[in-house]
Length: 250
Image 1 (tube, rainbow, N blue to C red):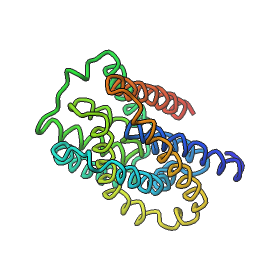
Image 2: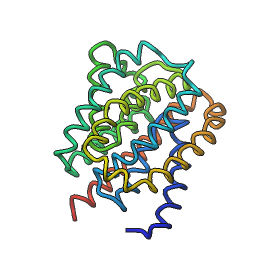
Image 3: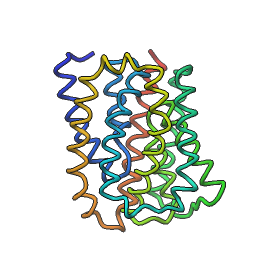
Image 4: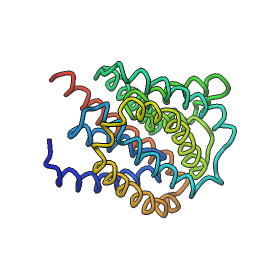
């Protein structure tokens, strides 16, 4: 465990990085901050605490990009993702297995590699397929606080320009947050209230990062955007697997 003030400073710095990455890839806040907060707090509490700055930064990002949202994808993919998020948050109050994190890491590595070699460009999700993928990604978000990577990996299977991609991924993230946060607040309200300094530090960092990341998104060429997202997904998958291996070995 880090000292209190060192932890707060690190949370702010990582929050800035996470917010900037999320502005480009459509995810990153929960993926980066949850493992860091888990060094200071119980993992379940870390997931609940991060959901607050995640909601605030996601709302800010969506306010900048909402005009680019693909409503068809949002309806087919987002609603079932929110339902999955609610289910995962409920199950997460009973389950706490590093094996779940390992499964998520494996899926992220596969998705990242598939994006880099062009396999996702041949994948197309339609109808019930989009709904199933949305539900699975949302459920992982509720369980381990890390649905963003697999959600963005799945969205690579849709033909979306970069700003529509980020806007739609962000809109789905808001739906998932709206579904899972009441569960966290109902079951862990007192613990979250005690952890308020971490909530404030993470919120400050992610808001600054979101504002910094938006100009970066506009400068990335459309031709390279999918590869950038795939590389981030791959890196996240490897980091997730390493964390799961350590947890299983301890």
